[in-house]
Image (cartoon, rainbow over all chains, first blue to last red; front, side, top):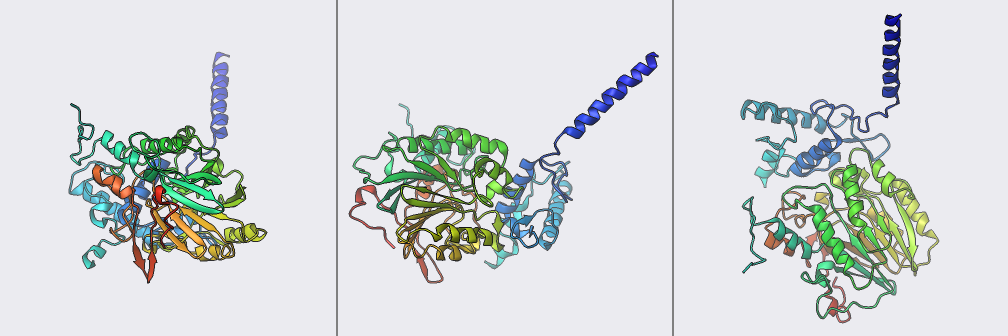
Length: 135
Length: 336
């Protein structure tokens, strides 16, 4: 009898938790198609990387990597339609690798202020670092 | 004896301490004072007219009597914390203090976008809290591209655009003047140029259709509606079409932000103005590898933000910037 009561309480609690979880609104920012940046990255950190590392570091705007939605000039941030986005991922992986392998940072993350090498190191406000040589 | 101009805490060895930085920023151009008289808009940089020490109008400056006045501030970038200005809230407060020190309370305020740096709720909250202390009437907003990051402007619309159309465009009338707030940051074009888009252009055409040609028009939007420097995205791709709807009006004033410096251009019946930022300066067009926050020594900051004259020539178009000292208002007309 006591065992049944305990099971009922546990089931009841579990049910309450399940209902509560189901009732929670979905995470306000569910970023789709993140492959290099952490999937659980906060909106603030993601935006900071986009602005500080990419926009300011390369002197570009969002549309440089992000494709537009079909029949619209609005950006589809999840889309991989533009090759520049793929290149950006490779660049991030390269940056992480350099900081890890050559500067011995244990857990380098894009946007981390402790990075020895970041986008600006080479790009210096230019979309293509080579542009600097031709100027 | 304490020297107030002495930099006492220079931790970064860059010639800037916080007090000195704020002092410089406080007198630098942190807002635009607009006076509408007889349908003609006159604009003045706040640093030109307000004494940095007293917060009052400078000696000898007489404001002409106008029908009404309003202020424009822009590019507050609340949340920005880099070296170009680690205290953007402090400099916004300095701009508000100047507005509050005006001898005539402005009828309302326009904020021409980039309220926030990263479109975060706490950044918008901080801006709202700060602007509560501004002694003006209603505040009208348009978004900057920083306000629509990640969500194409949904949060901005919920907060500031409840009674607007589309992505946040709208119009209103005040004292016989027709004001039009346009949004050119949600849609984008290659190179970062702003885009108004077909829906907004259709709305604009209808919005002004019934107005008489003698109605003074004031348009405000974040990214300049003229080609300041397209290589840096400082222009709006389809602005010519928008301006074509306004050509029949006798007086059109266009107020923008985005480029963090004061520029003015007069083209026929249309006068274009861009406002300084309350947060940080950006380089003059073409003078740096790219646009972006510009860190300068504190003693130069005021000069750069208080730019009164910038000449830029591109494709045989000369852009002239007018800087009018208030004491000369009646004697000197804006240069072209």
